[in-house]
Image 1 (cartoon, chains in turn green, cyan):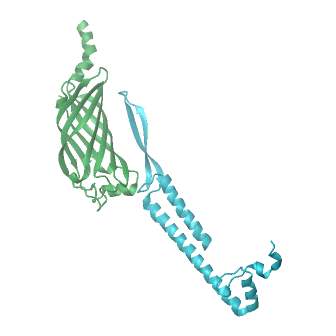
Image 2 (cartoon, rainbow over the protein chains, first blue to last red; image 1 turned 60 degrees about the horizontal axis):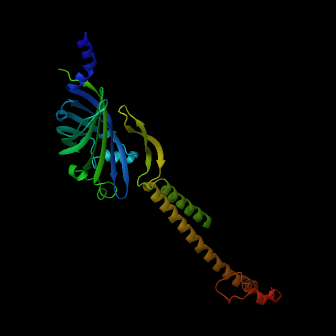
Image 3 (tube, rainbow over the protein chains, first blue to last red; image 1 turned 90 degrees about the horizontal axis):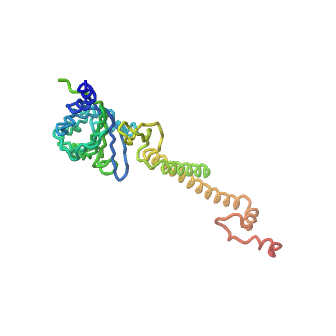
Length: 191
Length: 132
């Protein structure tokens, strides 16, 4: 009887210890800070993540952002953003990040809310160009709720995004700051 | 015409003022990002973002608008001044031709400037005002 009660009490913890998966959804904020203009925009992000709380180095995940969902508060500018001159949404409809390896930079802390900091190396694809990128991320989970936050910078030149002549560097920043915040619900991985 | 010019310049300055007051954007903002802070399930402060319809004038419209209005206003004022100058000289010539004596009297009064006899002080023609 005692062992049954103990099992019932520790079952959630045991369940968390096993690898789990979560469908992620959230938002990406991007900031272009150029000498002539600061543009702030948002886009919807979605993805999936597999996480073993006992071994965060095994994290595997993919995050996708639809170029069509990118907004900057000016319809005409949004159209330009999606056009072939810029991100070419017709040919490259998604921006994608796929994890390759994870290094834990700050081990798991916390009792109710678990938190860890990791450096995620992955393949980042933008405008049809894939590069390897390492970005810091904060992972938090509480019960079955999961949250992933990351910030990184993208150099337009590295992804062959030229824009109109003379615009990059004056009205559009050469580097774009990106903040991603995704949430999901952890579920046990199907055997 | 001069009044129209002044109105156009005032409108141009107004457009420039609105642009300055609405954040000096390069592109007109039709939607504004509104950020509200709340606490999430983890006890963290999170920013909820939403887009709200707005109209913040950008340089794409304000530039040509203000520039055009100021330009039109300047041209109208310039034309008005030229027309007035032309009207003055015409008036002087017609006064000389049609009514030489009236013209002289008028010119002597000092109210009309332009080519013709040198201006004189009205006091010279009206000695009774000399003591005023």
